[in-house]
Image 1: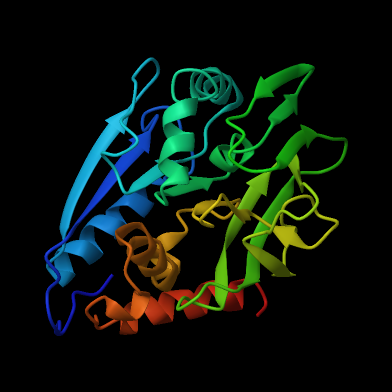
Image 2: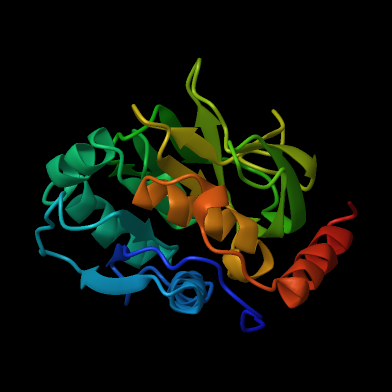
Length: 256
């Protein structure tokens, strides 16, 4: 990513991020999403704090503005699912209830709902949103993807890469993060991708990884602003010519 050419006013704020299971849920290099948050905060003169919470660690729902969950192998995902649904469940519900952002990618998305039927085993979910995931016969949902999104003050298009065997189905009235323009999405059949829910609309999940945010920095800014409780337009401007080029290439790769 390019460094900023200039910044207007510097907000006196700090983005406090908690990465859940950073050693186990990082199969698709999605730690790169955290780097995007850190660098863009630094370029804007915003503070940035990163904490991690692993298996058995309790979390303070008021100590962080954004909770991040990446994707993992089946075995690691199973370990994290049980911990998430027990030790961390109440704190995550409290955090989302006050408007903190919970941002989950791929395997993390699958754990946001009621559970995941995986190879004869039912993994519990944290039940922040009404969705369910199951392993069904058929090929993996794999390839470049682009989706149309409706995020107040945010981007209208996200582009990335998906690679998942699980099929996710949203409950009636549950909103997706976006609608598939190219690619497979949650289940390859209903045109939905990801989820956006919770009482404040701040529980966000997506199957797009690789990582996602370097190619969609407008979405990173929307997540940052939402976590800080400010309008995206209130963030100091950056010179995003290289980032815009990366987004354009990702969209073209998806056929948009």
